[in-house]
Image (cartoon, rainbow, N blue to C red; front, side, top):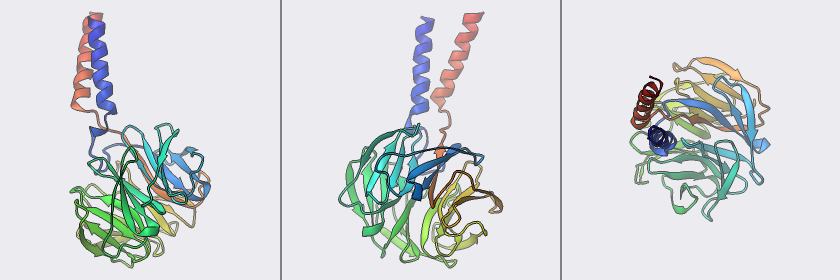
Amino acid sequence: MNRLVVRIILGLSLAAIQSPLAFSTILPPEQTGNFYVGDFANDRVAVYDSSGTFLNSFTASGLSGPRGIVVQPDGATYVASQFTDEVFVFDAQGRFEAKFTSAELDGPTGMAISDAGQLYVSSFDNARVVVFGLDGTYFRTFTGGGLNGPNCVLFDSSGDIYVSSALTNNVVKFDAGENLIKTFTGGGLASPMGIARDSDDVLYVTGGTSNNIVIFDTDGDYLGELTHPDLTGPQGVAFDDQGHLFSSSFFQNKIVQFDADGSYLRTIAEGGLSIPRSIAFVPVPEPSMITLFAFGVLMLIRRRLTA
């Protein structure tokens, strides 16, 4: 009987740990592990640990010009292949699982997953956002606000959507229903690429030709900017769980890290990067209440069995 109880509790624990509902997909993860970098010219995804040490890389036949990267809590990783108009899917170990596309997808770049579990993909060459299910099922497209050359898509905590428009030098904001709200720019932003947000809903937009990271609130008001000599042609941008900001340097093949106050911390130059683009941290879900309860029950059983 005791063994049966242990098996049941372990099953509950594993289900709770592996469930993609362990945290909201539109919020920054409360814990982060390794981070991935789209190594554009090498047609691979480079893997680094949280200290910036290069670990390995992964790819698949046909992956060409990897751009946007998103990672699910279970480790499933979606990578946009810009030159083949496809999205590749890998498992937590970097093994290829599947790929999908749509006639509406033309030059996929940045991606994001909504809280409803839908994959939003920026389609650069036909100026729209294409929405898929996580299984690759095509749902719909939307555009507006003069969107031209969309590079990245991001959700804020209320579900509003932000798309960087590289060829119009601004950001286009939509509501959660994909209706146009406004466009905004500032800080000399030119060729906006990646967008990230911190836990306070402050937006950080990389300027690919303005060589800065421009900071906005969700109303589009300019708040400031970050620069560093090692950050030229900034592309991808992402936060870790310490509030540190990482951005890729297109022209110097490096990753530049800032602290939570925006002060420069270090430059990561290892790994043989060639035109680094998107950056994505692997989320580590917090233990759920079911997991914590199960752990407590296991400890109680263990004490009784060894008494």
